[in-house]
Image (cartoon, rainbow, N blue to C red):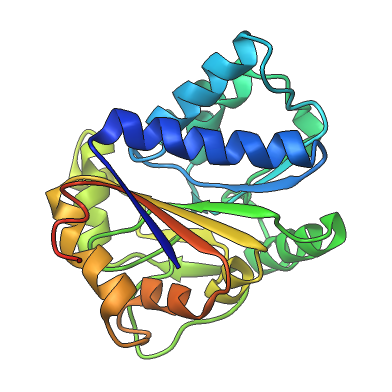
Length: 242
């Protein structure tokens, strides 16, 4: 596990963008696993700027997003379909047919989960998976529990997650209580993993991730067993580790 500590959010985002860009440059048809939330926004802005300067070409990549809210229409501003379009896909030359995001409105959600898992496998697996992290250690929407399922699935959201995500909605009551997410096993199959975290609220989560016990009570701790994980942190997120 590599840990890179940057001065602040801006420098952290630039470093993360360089890592993603290098993956695309070295393997133009690579498979990227992407994340939503406020943490990767700076990285996406940097990647868009690099594309507009002609420094990177996304025309051959395929993308798979970690998750999507259940029963939230994709045209809603809080949906991850909308988020990715607004913050990345509409600004680069990725082909629409190469974009994959779980379909939270699917009539048969179990079939959707199986087909999403199959699509990742048929693409050859994820080359670089970008992750954020919740204060309770969730990655994707794999919440703490007595057990964790390995593959893409419909899950219930923890109250801590609902509270944290309520900032994106008009009220806490509007936050969906379920989501479709890649399973922890699917995430760990990625050849490389890049986890981003910033701010003091993530400091304890990072400490548990890198130096705690491996436990389903803190899902991100399982990253300790992956052979190629890089953490890019600002100084506040890294404040509780050596």
